[in-house]
Length: 452
Image (cartoon, rainbow, N blue to C red; front, side):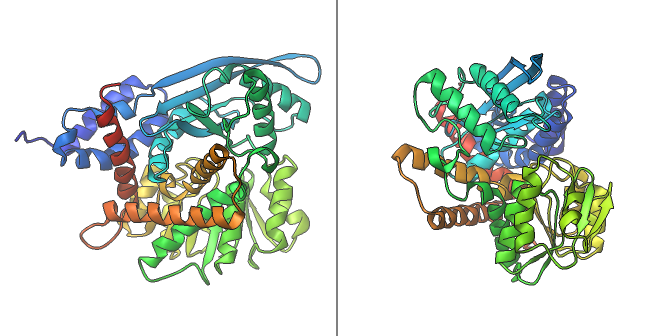
């Protein structure tokens, strides 16, 4: 049998990815994080030899970039750029969110679409991976401007999506309002009422607990992680970043399970509330978000006894569990060192790739329970999958039923990650486990379908 150096294989693979995708740091980071654990696994499987499976997964099946012209309230023409990355459809229609934010570019969306392939595979639901969005900024825009932009965006996007082809959802900057406008335009253009988008309002096919689902799923996953060391969330001090949908769901479920959340954050800095963020304080986060302002400091307007730390991140607060719930690369090596030094035992990613590679490696080296977002935040897309099911069977499930199914899916994801990620000393490397478990299902489907 040919003897080769796995490290060399990884380097050669990444050199090709970097050459092919210049100026795409987020995408290269996401691929590397998968490659370092999946390439050694591929080397142990004869049936994968020479099939270039990871190379094929790292190349989108289709990238759509389009112009979005629209008219603002002053009657002026504005021009934005729209994207849809259809990454992999081996196990089902493309599935993944739409993000409206000034930072949206090809690299960010390709990284998110790549992650989505593995995340969707882990849910065990029949969903491929995709992602889309625009550099449009909904902040400070009127409802009419947002509506006109969404309609212009859907005029082009509608040609490339459908309930059996590609089912987008919301993401940063795309909430219930935007999904409603997008869905309405799709319905008008195509003259059909289908489950083409998820995250819809309850009045027209949405699922109960979808807004909370990502955060709930993250906490269910953390609960399973802690069980592996005979521990639980009850009585733990918890640091959370962000204060959007995901953070809100994380905080709600942490409180349900007896944990105490002491931080939230925004681009302006973080809030420390030593009394814990619970009860009406959780609902106030919704008011803060609905105001269209993303300043964490606004929390002090209602709860002045809390402290605000401008320009800083919540990872300096002493905590048992950390839930990064804001955005990519918000937790770096120095933050990781601080968390470990302060006795943090569990870091469960709620956002997409919020930890840098150096931070992840530091957690793993220090045997901290650490879960990558593709595993622990899969509850959002899992519930989107449940919304698709409800749309297909023309039924609505109760919130209890959706929540029970969500918890069951998160327990299943945890088991798959644990089985593939368990190391000789008993420590569970969830990064390795999630990558391999997610890869295997997609790889098997790709092998079965031939070179397409």
